[in-house]
Image (cartoon, rainbow, N blue to C red; front, side, top):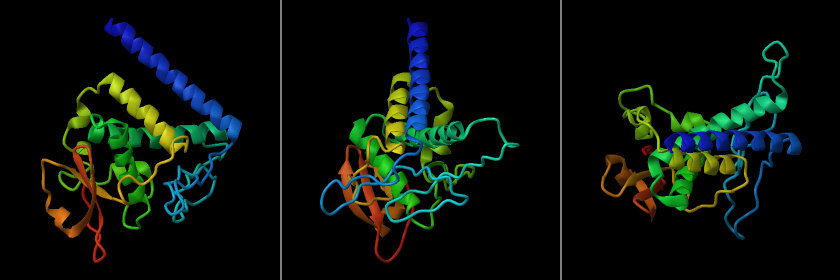
Length: 225
């Protein structure tokens, strides 16, 4: 029974990747902006797919994915290169949502995704999803998301929860499921059963499930997750 379940999940993953690549071929590039959720607050935009030589960002646009299309570098098509890079960024987002909020439901996982996207819009954070999620992961201390340096990633994942996180992340990154602003522009969060030292330097915005979210205070920007 376990083997049948694993085979089914592998087939589902292959179907997911194939469908995504096909959609890229059909639409050429994802839309760089998404509609407003109301009259005042813009949603968080999906990752832009412009083929710029250098990444760029605006207030409501996450950085473009730079793709080297030199013939000598690869035999893959332009669309395949874009798909590979998007899938890599999507999986980084899925890792954050899975390890930080897999038991928090869809809203909790989307809140974590918001934090990642909000950080990309601050100049003192990395400008890519993977950069934000794995910032400091090579250090003994200083990783921004604890799962990247505390050994959690060495343990087997729950196959069902991981697949759900991957699907949700892919929908977010491609703009199929736009992020709103559940967290009030938060760039940090912590579990309700801990009280990190950085929390006092930030402005609390909201509690979603077992996580409390914060945005930078006006006088300073303090990081932590």
